[in-house]
Image 1 (cartoon, rainbow, N blue to C red):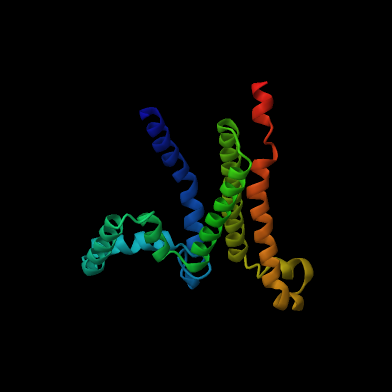
Image 2 (cartoon, rainbow, N blue to C red):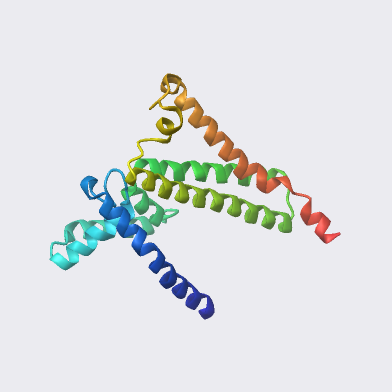
Amino acid sequence: PWKMEVVEVLSVTAVSFFLLLPIIALHEANLASGGIGGRELPAPQAGLMAELAQGIVGGQMPWGLLVMGCLFGIGLVMIEAPSPMLIAVGMYLPLETTSSIFVGGVIKWLADRWAARRNLTPEENLKFEERGTLVASGFIAGEAITGILLAVLFIKGVPSLTRVFTGREAFPFLASWGGYLSLMVFATIAYCLIQVPLRKRGEGVSDRA
């Protein structure tokens, strides 16, 4: 709908005024380490767009690589790959990002299979999808806010929250148990993404009654 398109354009324009100054401040405060896009403030998508823009403006565009990528994309479409766009995104995003996306896909697959076994009605299945989307959106928003807070702490010269609150940089037991703790966190996230949407299965029945 055209009204939705107009609102999206207006919202992006309005938000850009609020985002511009914080982004410039973070970039200028971290110029020694490369600014935004450096090791401490990574931005792979923005870096890719910046390289393309610099190549076009400077006349140094690597057309051979672009043509190769276009041919590769055409090949993916011809073989009817499930999602050529996701394959392309996974080729330039860092491994820690793509691995998280893979884990999220596995959780979604498990949630769908779990819901299928419960023989949900169409109304209950819609509620399940909506709740799952809301929970996942909350995780995305929380991750974004956490990333901003960590960037601000880095700019302010705070080495780590562990040192601030405990006076120690690291704990010895994390060297051997850190991986297991990470798996526990992933298991908790999977539980939230699967069980929270399924928890109120009976709402659809009660609403109809």
